[in-house]
Image 1 (cartoon, rainbow, N blue to C red):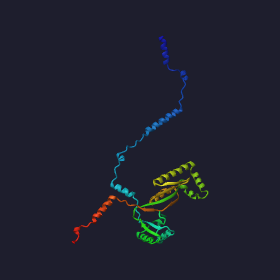
Image 2 (tube, rainbow, N blue to C red):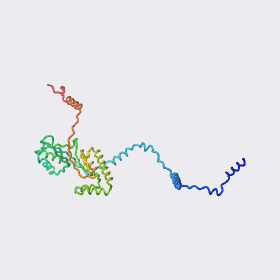
Image 3 (tube, rainbow, N blue to C red):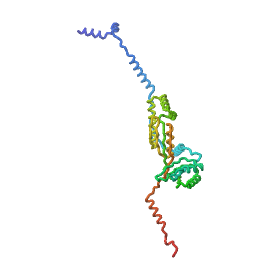
Length: 313
């Protein structure tokens, strides 16, 4: 019994013969596993050879920058200030003419100004709440002495009731703008201007199809319309009409503000623009009741006469 156990253990411990080695089949290794292991190994080695560069920590100077010095602040202001023109611009004068509502008044007023060589910046005339009275707002640019002579000459006209000069006063200025802007893009503005012919709209479609697909053209059109709408809201205007290729914008503001809006809208492509001219009305003064009472008391106290200062008798 003990001998059989010894023989069996010896048999298990003995090395395999050639026939036994031939009977064992070798296992095949998948090449994809080799590739994955090689690629992962190369990635790890690449990361080891190229360590990740850590960004430097934010310093206190970046988080809490020091205030600029007086010299730096002054140089910054001087750099950002636009240069002053060498030529002096002529002063702007605003006339408000109250005229009789009858034919020929506008031609007579404009004839006097044209005879003196004035260039009228804007002229607005319309009837008022009174049936026989019209209001005319004229904006001129020239020297003060020449303007005063023209104002007196306008007052001498028979149908003119009065000429008010608002130059130097606080007035409310408003002007109306209607502008038609393209939403197809600036490259199609020329084709849109020529689209008054029967085949003009087909030309616009052909140009759009050559440049981009219909879906991209639709996205670009709505993108331009959205940008125009947001820009109009910033200036407190409104879009009053929208078509497939353009939009009409209405804006009522000061003349300088309208000039700025036209410059910002110009890159989109302006098809048409109309301005009404400037209308003006003086601001009403604000009086303080307590100040007025104090002035009245001061005037009453100052008007009294001291009897001791009067001559005898």
